[in-house]
Image 1 (tube, rainbow, N blue to C red):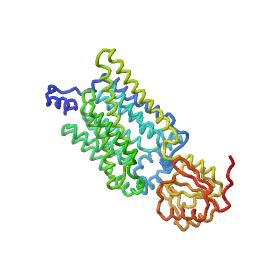
Image 2: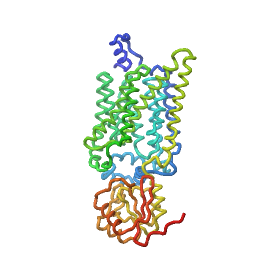
Image 3: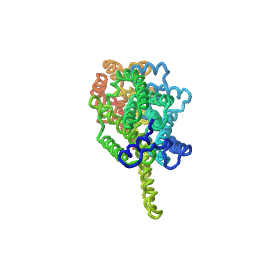
Length: 519
């Protein structure tokens, strides 16, 4: 089987540049080979990612609504989780079972909730470093791993109690195994590992299959021999077939993602910026014995998954950046190897006196880049970094409510704000709730018919309403319509407080509003 180095040299020979000789199969020659280089490329990024992930992991003791769902589902019994998956969130089923097992062993609150993501990003950073090392050498490996670690999006989901960091780590592992298969002898164990990594990634979130598409582009562009193409096709086919049951089940739950709209202008700008940087870096030839493979690997991984999700919007909007977090693996490989090539070019041309200003400029630019990321890094560890803050919502409810008050969630899916902090809502009557989330095998519970919601609301003197911030579309279902109608015609608004990503409003009958608090 020809290695990528052989392919590259033959391409150059066809252009009359070099004689046709096979390149060595060992690690890329830049500048340290062997175990020491691999260990450095693995541990430096992994340790850096671990340190960043553990720093401020509790995010000032707060969580947002998606994490709240993870927390409360993970605390259900296995049979209750299994029943839930038949109705909702099948795409996260494996993750919920894993988190249930972890909480069964260690009830560590927010640390238990987020530690798996921290460890996953640490592993992914090390794997990015190893992959870049194999293609372009030690410096490229360290830089690529650090670029991945410092990426704001990666830092964000490293401290998120959801599956996206785990998916990213498994895609990084599959990518590394694919590179090993394309650049050296690939036995059954290597391909079995690749298949398992891809399959687990897809079972944690089915959109990881988009990484498999990107890998297929890489295999095609690499023009490797028939044996490798056949082995990859078998691995991809096995993973795809095993994914079918999950895909069928989750397709029946597609209403859960009806909230997804098209990308906002800011997101379009970010997508275009990433694509531009990726293409420019791909054109910058990296050093090493396999320079042609790197863009053939990293560019499809960076661009193809996002492009496919955007194309799917013709049928139904599906793009959410966290669904394709693993594209940052490809982007980090491109940026890191380009930086390595730039450092090499700057530091090796001319005498020291001529090189020193260039070296100083590169070092200053790197320092500026790190300093520019510092505010983002700090902000990621605050409650304001997420869409909402269920902890702050619970505290505000406790402040404005009194025992015996009613509480209404409008829309009903915002009941997820309550589920992780039930004690903060003690003494309040959930006026619309018919069956609890556990009893109904659902995420937010099952609400009563509109007539019963009306009757229960009219029996109250005071109602605390938890809703989305102004400007969000109103649900048109009958239960939501009757909530709005009763509040509008039978109650007065006593107070309205904006909390991060939410608002808490106290309604009361005439004469039942609390007196204004003095300054």
